[in-house]
Amino acid sequence: MSYDEFDFKEKKAEAEEYIMQAEEFLREGKILAGLKTYNKAVNIYFNIGAYLKVPDIFMRISRILSNESKIYQALEYLRSIKVRLNELDLPEEEAKLAMEMANLSFRVGDYYKAADFYEECAELYLKADPEEFRSASSLFLMRAAECYEYAGKHEVGERIVVHAVLRLNPKSVDFQVEEHRGIKFLKLGMYEEAVEVYTKLFNFFDQGLSNLSELLGDLQASRLNIISIYAKTRLVHIISEYRLILMHCNYLLGNKEEAVTFAEDSIDQLYTSIEMIKSMISQEIWSREDIKRLTYEGFMAAYFQLFPGLSKSYQNMDFEDIMAEGMEGTPLDVLKSLPYYNLVVRMKSYDRNEIEELLKEFNLGRLEKYKDLLMGKV
Image 1: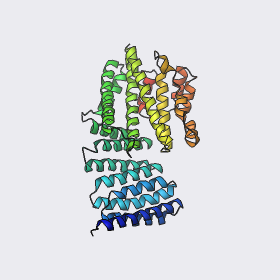
Image 2 (image 1 turned 30 degrees about the horizontal axis):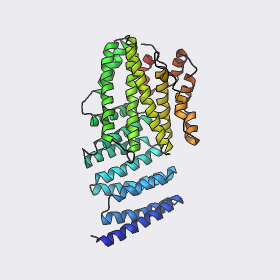
Image 3 (image 1 turned 90 degrees about the vertical axis):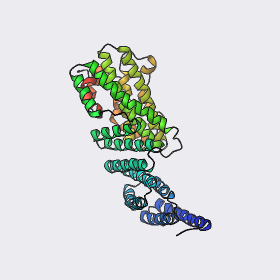
Image 4 (image 1 turned 120 degrees about the horizontal axis):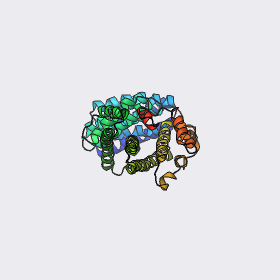
């Protein structure tokens, strides 16, 4: 069916009227009525060929929904729309819808399903335009990795992060083999060899971060801005972990100035990462897991501060205050209830030995395999 310009505008106005009615239903808690009314608008957009309008509807839905059971109802409906977009071979529009489905799944704590949708989103963007959406594809892989981290699947998350970085930096590195070699060298006290391995890994991810920043440009007005924050902070986190290992190795080799540089550079990057996460919270775009990530970054920064020889400006940074500054209400309550926030508070008055005892109580995620190094046992 074809439409002249008048009919097109008339049908578009009709669809917009349905959208307004649907949003009112959702605000009143009438989920099924709202989704049925949205469907009328969707059918109009499909009939007039205004496919670009379809994902916008569901971005509006995801902002309105808050109740978990309502989100599940919406997800079932979104799956049927996604099938229609797939049949029309519209990968960019399908990717946008997959992103919203991932966001909704994440909000209800279904991290595996969220990861699946983010990975699918990454592949759909790559299919739509490999050059234009290369960075976007990498961002969504990073987000999928984040979901696996939240689900406790650290190794799966690591593999996906490497895959994401390879899209930004085609220079390959056998991540797992290199880490295995590095851990072996550390256990044998072969610190020069360990430095070579971890410098290679550090450079790989650092180049990925540089490429990501260059490709993203200014995303302040983009829907990908929040995803870019997740990706950047994830890479900063991994880079800081490698800096931590390199700091210890260089110190044990007597390269104290280089070790101090690693510590101070990481404090700078972790501070920026904390501020980026807080910017999401200030926009009321956050989950408990985001605040947990913020506290872990604060812990890492506070740990770097323990290293001897740092300049006064770094020693005097108070990460308890930095994490909490500008936060209020529920986010602040969540922050203060989290173990790593309280660890940072306690670290301010504990000596190194007491802090090492404290660390025994914590699972350090990816750093767990380096715990002996952090506690001075290698």
